Image (tube, rainbow, N blue to C red; front, side, top):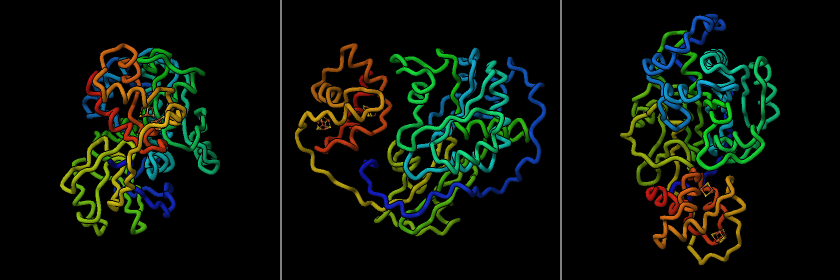
Amino acid sequence: MLRTIKIDWKIPADFRTLETPFPRPERIYSGIDEIDPKTFPAFLDEIGLIGMGGGGFPASEKLWANRHSHTLVINGVECEPGSSIDKSVLLNDSLWVAAGAAACAKVVGATKVILAVQHNPEFVAEVNKLYSEFEILSFPDKYPAGAEKLILKRLTGKCPPPGSRPYEFGFLIQNVVSLRAVGRAIVDGIPVVERPLTLAMPSTGFYKNIIVPVGISVSELLDLYKLPYDSGIHLISDSGIMMGKEISKSSTIEKTTISIFILKRDVAFREERPCTRCGVCNTACPLGLHPFTLTEKIRKGKTGGNAFKGQMSECFLCGVCSAVCPSGIPLVQTLEKGKQCL
Ligand code: SF4
Ligand code: SF4
C-alpha cells in the first residue's frame, strides 16, 4: 500500500546536518589491537546490537558466520527515496563508523575495507577525505542499488547463485549505522540505546536527520518537532515507502527504524488491467526474476515447485516490478503472500 503513496519531495535531502545530544569523539580509537576476536561476538550481544540497516538480525551471529572474510564492505548505498540518514552518519560520525569498521575487520580477519556509497560527486569527494584509509566504491543513485545481493553482484562481477550469502565469497557487508553503533560502544562504552533516523513531513517542508533514544514514541517525536500530524489526513511510514510499513503514532522507535515520514494519504490508485506480457517487470527486476510468472503461480496456488521456491526465496520484495507495471498489477503485494508459502 505504501508503495502507491505519492510524495512531493520538493525539499532537498539535507544530509549535512545530524542533530544529536551526544558529544562526538575527538580522537580515533586506538584500542583496536586489544580487541579479542573470540570474545567480540559476546560483546556485540552485550551491547544489544542487531542489524540496524533494517534486517534486525543478531550482529554476533552474522559476525560469526563471516569469521573468514577477506573484505569488509561498509554499506552506505542508501536508496529508499527520501532517506539520507546513512549519508548524514557517514559525514558527521565518521570516527565512530571508522572505529566500528576497523574492529569488525579485525575480528573477521579482513585485510581490506570498502566503503560503498551512492554516486554523488560532491558527497563522494567528502567521504574520500573522511575515509582516506578505505577504498571508495560508488553505486548508481537509484533504488534498490543498496540491496546486499546487488552490492555482491558488483563485487564479484556475477549474479550470486540463489540462496548464497556474501560470506561464501569472502565479503562481510555491514550497514553504516550498525558500524557506528559498534564504534560508539568500543570508544565510549555506550550500548545500542540510540537510533539515527530521517524524520520528514514533506507537505510542510520539514526534513531532519536526528538521533533519538530507542523506545521513544512517534507521538513524542511529533510533539518535540511540533509536526501538525492529523490522522484523518496523514499516515506515518516507518522506514520508507518501498520497504517500510504504516505505523500508528503510539508506535515506538526501534533499533531498525531507518526513517519516519509523515505523508499525506494521497494514494495513486491505479486500476488493475490484464497483463499485456510486455515484460517490463522482468527487465526491471534487479535480480532478473520473473515477477508476473511468480504472481500467476501464487494466484493459482501452484507454489510447490523448486523453480518457484528458488525464485521466491531470492525476491527481497523491493517493489520495483509493481512500480513499473503499466497495467497496475499489484505484483509485490502478491509476492509478499508468496513468501508465506516458503
Ligand atoms: S519485488 Fe519484484 S523487482 Fe523486487 S526482487 Fe522481487 S520480483 Fe524482483
Ligand atoms: S509489467 Fe505488468 S503488464 Fe508487463 S508483463 Fe509484467 S505484469 Fe504483465
